[in-house]
Image (cartoon, rainbow, N blue to C red; front, top):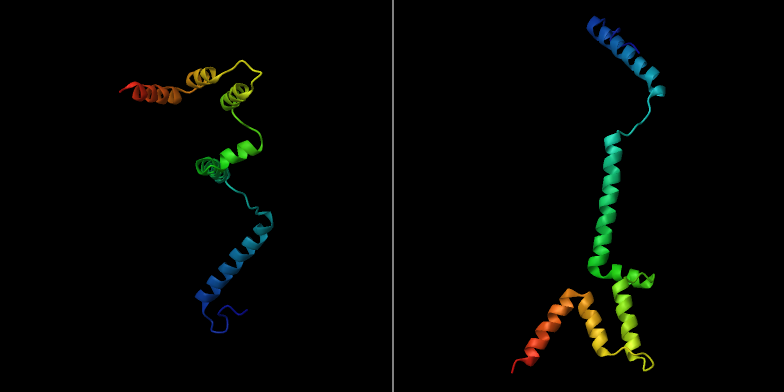
Length: 127
């Protein structure tokens, strides 16, 4: 490389020599350079993964697929299981449970059902 020596331009020769020296320094340092992710960026990545996971769970349960998955793996909450057992016992002639006990248990376990039941009785009793 002549770096301007053919034209005798000392400014170009000095600039080119300086650039060559800087490039040589960079080439000497390159083997020791390692790619590191800043800690805040790693944390941001984990937070993003957590947000996506929570969003997926919310979407599953809002669309009804979450309930289907829970039923498929047999993870049924305790209250519906107890109500189903009482209903099954109510239908079994060998068991003493009847419809009154089922309704009483249902009203005790679910305040919304209790309020709806009271409203239905009030409407039925009003002439």
